[in-house]
Image 1 (tube, rainbow, N blue to C red):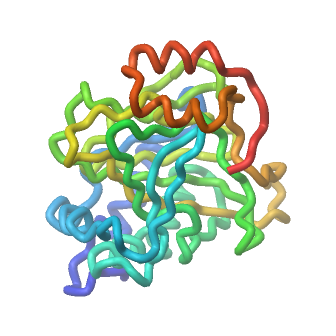
Image 2: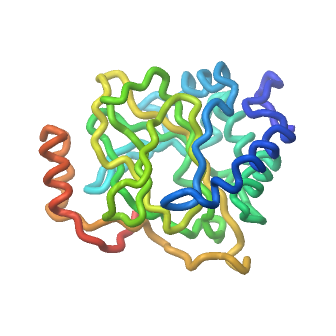
Amino acid sequence: MTTTTNGTRLTPHVDDLLRLADARAEAYAAADPFPHAVIDGLFDPNLLRRVTAELPSRDATGWTTWDTVNEWKYVFDNPERFGPHARGLANELNGSEFVRFLERISGIGGLVPDPHLTAAGYFDVRTGGFLDVHIDFARNPKLSLVRRINVLVYLNEDWQDDWGGELQLCRTVDGPPVQSVVPLFNRMVIFSTPDAAHGHPTPIRAPERRSRLCFSAYYFTSPDQPDSPTSLNGVLFAERHGGRRYADARRFVPPVVFDGIKAAKRRYKGGTG
């Protein structure tokens, strides 16, 4: 059994997790535009608030800044520098009980978590930040495994619709959203990869002291597994033009103008990230 430092679980008992997985597996497989589930209230809300409160300060060692033409966000993927409740959440997401739940709901056997949280952990997207619709890298270079499942746990209490930040699920990186998921507190999104086009391309419009917060974890299988997909070593974005100047312009151009320019610029192309 995986617990926080004071012995309290963030997730339900494994029997409850597996019952939930059985109840949602059929809908997960049939979901449009790719297999996914949106589950509210799975985690203990008081403990999840402590995970949010432990968000490392911006000057803490371990933050990675992604500030490119395709994204503007901050990632903290150093579990050894997490607070005790964030470590507890990471441990539960990487534990055998939660992995069994993911295997049951997704139908993907042999899932392997990443204890290093490579490119996962805390996501912090400030006002003006965004993440273009993309298809994730498929192979974890540290583990030499193929990525199969993404889990996103949102940490945003009292999030307002007009602040933006909806997770868009699309059929292609250039296609319109088929589903939009508001990043509400204690909402978890699970989806199968690769070939899952997703992102939150509209710049965040939250007040100055608020940001779009998420805790994430990824799961993998052996490349020798019979249903293992062909690996994609980089992230696949739609093409942009204008380089760095275009990335900087998003901070000063009104969102409605920026979105119009962005739509006009996009063409399909593979990229790295």
